Length: 371
Image (cartoon, rainbow, N blue to C red; front, top):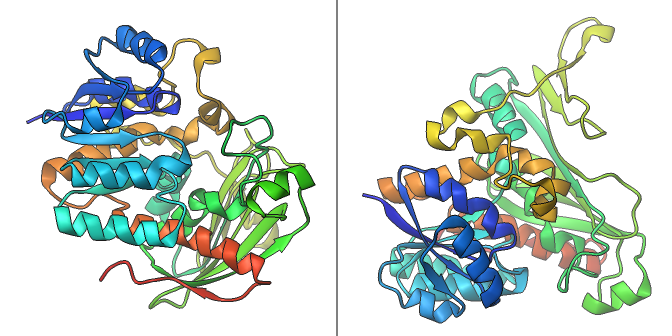
């Protein structure tokens, strides 16, 4: 039986419409955006009849099984909670929320309603992550000893809620892969701020730091991870990197876009230890109907693509993988990955990391979202 999907927010959200339209488990049923002109333009372009400019009216539609939320960050928690309480399953773009209390409330509401929640974290479905996951699961990495990730991006010129945002408040692209590879739960975090951004930016969120770098200790594990973020006033090409160090092999992300990552293999002669590798695409894991979306955006015209998609290098082909995971989880009545508790843990690492940075690196413990 097909699930009726509603997409909320049609900037970045429009990227997902044709994926849902082609997925064998989905009926791309409704779209929602406050701007009626744009709502109708996209509805006409994709042939979607059910259109809502009011979110509450969308949630009152009994035909909607699940909502995929792509609205601005400040709206994520409120809209997710409303949807869950209206009896809808929720997929939501990152981050889950802006406070730890909101994360706790979403997890609690999922338990109370029995509805599923998935944070649509692109990195844990990007081809690079899937490649490293395969290396880990086949034993090629050996014992994992350390994980590291970065996300550096120049956000000047981005809209409304982005200017001056604390770097770690948008940390899931770093935290997701280091926690997600071994399905680890962050226990506590310590973070330092470094440098300063322009005063007119710093005053918006009372967040002065140009870079925030954090160490994460994982629960019931000998592992820790290091993540760092920058959003303003740091000279760096866009980079979302994920690295893992094992006792047999290690994977290091390329320093410059369009170069190749490196595999280091232990016990070889020193010059032979590093080897550049080509990361394969993982479209074969998907239904044939949506495989093409791992290597192409949904628009025919490049200039129409959302800035986060083009600047983010197409998000590693992750979009159809995320859609497939969400739909198959609902179809099989299981938790998607990441589920509500995992999403809350990843999001709260960033929230508490920023708080730690503001307190000079103080250790901040995470709540247990699993109980």
